[in-house]
Image (cartoon, rainbow, N blue to C red; front, side, top):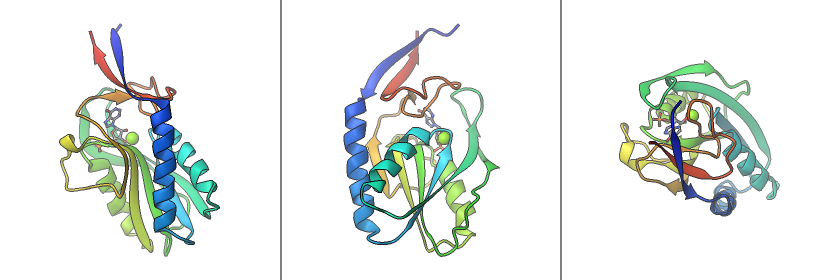
Length: 178
Ligand code: IMP
Ligand code: MG
């Protein structure tokens, strides 16, 4: 059994405040337009749930969908080859799309998703990530909306997991072994 240590990195309160300000930024950029949010499962579920509730406060007209990509094997090592497991069900042609993910790491997942959705002819496409590890990037990609930049460490909580665990934590912690 792994002996896991969790070191708090971002508190629940800081996340709540940042999600509120992200929603304000998004609303200002998309005045009046209706938005199609596409969350990447599983990691984005908690961020997505908080973000849509904040956006709802501004009476944004919204469509919500999810897609599932895998790029990680069972552990922390990325395979580097994202695969589509479950596609969106909505039509995004001529729609303003916002792709929402938990964390931007190498960037391979988001790049794969953007290339996949581009073919469906959305009116515009932007990206929103809760966390960003800029030090790990392997493709030239920057999110349009970023919650927090974090150091190159493996983090869990707020949707992010280690082998299926810790997704339920309302805050973000750095995971290490001892
Ligand atoms: P990328 O393709 O390397 O950018 O990886 C993005 C995906 O890898 C995210 O959607 C996460 O699911 C997962 N991931 C990357 N870094 C971490 C981490 O520190 N903790 C948990 N999952 C991570
Ligand atoms: Mg993910």
